[in-house]
Length: 145
Image (cartoon, rainbow, N blue to C red):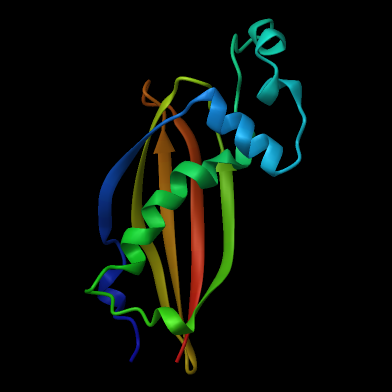
């Protein structure tokens, strides 16, 4: 059964994420990025940011919290056994810093029904506590029929 395109534009409740230097460090080490901006508090204090900052791709940490509600959305009736990750793309704006509170919102930006598969895209926009955009991500999933 095809995913109904009437769900394009459907929004999901916002999620808040409190950024902390420990999570930034863990992430930087996990991706094997030893940049002092991410790991060294003394170094980071001397930069224009004044504190530890997050690698740009840290956005997957706070943005991913909005993908699970899409997968469990009973209205969509996604066949998770047939779902695969298609692609993801990001646009980065403001730097994410230790102490930021990131609010992310998601909506279904596109649904394409093809003969043997459906493609669903979820757009996540994240802002910091000042209301500044920090990242926009588009997560695309393919569901084989």
